[in-house]
Image 1 (cartoon, helix red, strand yellow):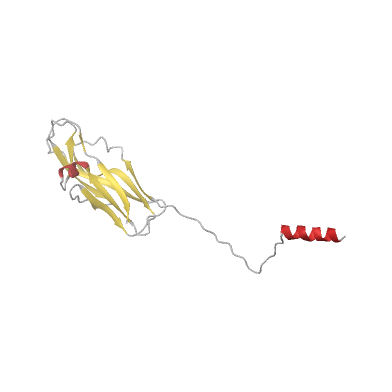
Image 2 (cartoon, rainbow, N blue to C red):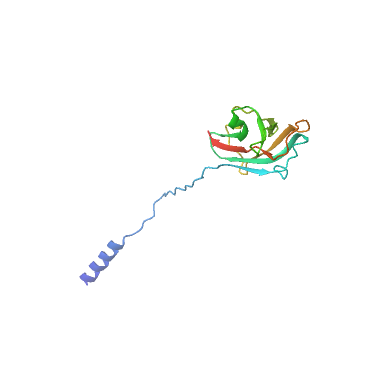
Length: 166
């Protein structure tokens, strides 16, 4: 009989007993990935502008900025033509290298005029984050094409938007 009791004690000892304590803690933790993105939705007219007419504040795109960076973010806009010439004015130039005509234009972003310096402009500079769906702004263009007397050709400029955390 002594051997059976000893065997039962040894079995209980190796299984271990679980005792409840008067308090217990549970740590819950999660993470939120960084969001820093920009999307450009061109208007239907963006690639078929009539450069022989005058345009004033014509919407050519809708831009959505999204960021959850605690120190805020900036958005810059670069005109390929203005940057290539190191200039402060954006312009259309012919895709035909033998045509030297150009047509200057101005932009507004979210209702504020865009000022280029060496082809680059800061169009958003904020110390906060956006809403979850982002902040949306219209990009509008203005130009005087009626008096430009341009050579028959296709004219273009490439605009590049860049969002960066602070």
